[in-house]
Image: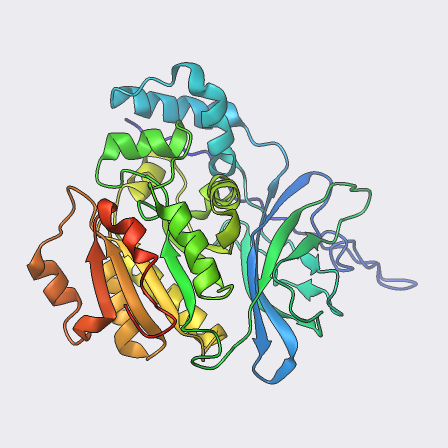
Length: 387
């Protein structure tokens, strides 16, 4: 099937000058076109917040924002995806509305050169992100200072400073967490992989994966919501962070699922940046492990930089590269205290794989488990050093 390109890059340039009496300052030069306007749409991602290493009394937050044209042409993307699904024997049928909700960001046109400013009530400073870039197709991200914030907040609301004549509100949650020393946080936080760890994604089955991604209501892995509720208590309110091999274009769908199904374990989601320009490439991205290992290792490195004194419980599964990613992170620093890997039926669950992945990781620092063993994990005293 011929690839059908549906994303494009819009470049806005403006130059104008007058010889006398003074040079005219264009709206672009004055920054009036930098902020998202009424014709733009903004997705602000939930953000982790952490103490400023230069001044621990202040708070830094890692914000990401995506700016696009306000109304995407869903018809083009819908036709391309339904044709591809049909070629695989998948009938969209009555799920067209679900499909179009899921592909809104895939079909959107990202805008470069947009500067998003974020305000968080309870913090003294607003956060200003760098301009969205051409290479990232409208995405921008950075750790920004919020100055001094209210203490002991568990979740705060961030909102995008609106542009002129724009009454819409784009919001996200901010999850502050202390850079507590070992033992102060009762053994750590919970680092989780979303796909097939907390949500059934059928990563190993291409057709099932595409159906669960584009058409079906999400389903939690049986027993996982209860386990995460237990961990939120036994680890005394840890910072939950979700790391997924999925693209950020599916963030709204994943975020809604986490907020509703794992209400006691909400936290920011880190997802990959999909910068391809056609539907077949996007589907190939979804069904490939390429880059997943490097992405997850880099994300864990970033978290360990944010919270260098935190201890982490790493939970993943055997479908992709979680054993390898978590073992790599474990060997880099001593901040991962325990690794749990769910053995997914049909994946490579061989002793050879796990022996290779966890070489030089002490046997008491990782375990594998199947679905019937999930309830028993709540009895493990991770905070007390068990794994």
